[in-house]
Image (tube, rainbow, N blue to C red):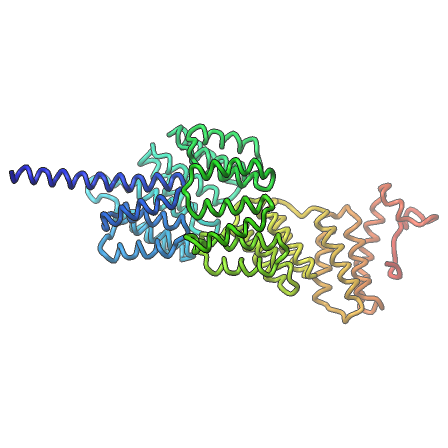
Length: 524
């Protein structure tokens, strides 16, 4: 009888372990589908059943992080480590939180190396643990472009792929690290995602990631191709429908609604789905209904759902109440974790601040922050353009020039002639308005450097020379400073050399060819 009891107890223990493991696997699967609420609930049960299970603790922390609850993840990992669950995977989790909260990446990497060492067998052949290496890669793949070290993550993920060559998740994390490095690595990201689909043709997340790349590139044909493959692989993979909703929300609100319905069908019924319903109402122009949805959320179970503030801000902006819109964005930034804040949120705040005289510097700061957060070149150019326009509106041409040079670097070349023309026109108009006031050497130097840069970039175009002469004469009306001497000589040299038909209109009737319409210090 005793043996039977012992055998029965052993069976129960094994069954409990298997059940707990299945619960963890279920939680990880929910995370794969981006059903974060279900993942948290499932993994919380797993940790409650076995408070010292490092795998359950690690994945619960990951679920908290995906949900933007960085402090909860930090507390979870720290408490586990303090209570004797001193496992390498939890060291990686703690380091991951540290990175996401803006901590020193080198300190986190030191912990990661210690985790690798601790998880490597000391007897026989020393082979690192693939799960630990993958967790490190996952840590480096998340967050903005200024968080973590994607190159370090790539190195660890390549090693993990050697150790566990049939795991598609490793290749998805690898692709995400490549994307964090910027546009030049898009091809490598694509190959990593494609490798994941080859390992598991039903792995919808990898097709989805490729579709996201093409969506950010505004390549709808390829986006549709890969999103279609994701749906074919797994029609219940809700994130695809969400991206289609967001894509169509500003183009075709009725089509957007169809995809939203699909998303709601397969996603968790939680605050996120409520938020997107409110977002649809906003996109459909039903601002009062959208506001009512936000109020309903904050009056119920979603009272601590931070993005409801963003919904308020967008609705009040469309209703013409920029004061309330700005206040709700301020509230959002105060209460939200860094991982919850998207570049679009920051850019929207910048545009709101730009509506208030005297707050242009704050507006520019927000727009520049959005530029730094984003990894999509087209979005970055849009944010820089908005920031440059705000600077120009403020007559801060030095700042405008600085921002536009960042834009030129992003485009991989110099500013266009149109860009220079607009800036040169703006600075000369500003000089004309200020010409009655006391001479400001610093302002003149800034303006002159802009038009001089125009000439250097496009020496065969006359406009730069003309702007420089006009600027100098407006800033030196009585010619006592001699500001116009060099610009006029420079312009005359250009006109003398330029024998093209386009310059004939500049020559006065009866002038000789050698004169070529040259100007003197008495003319503007």
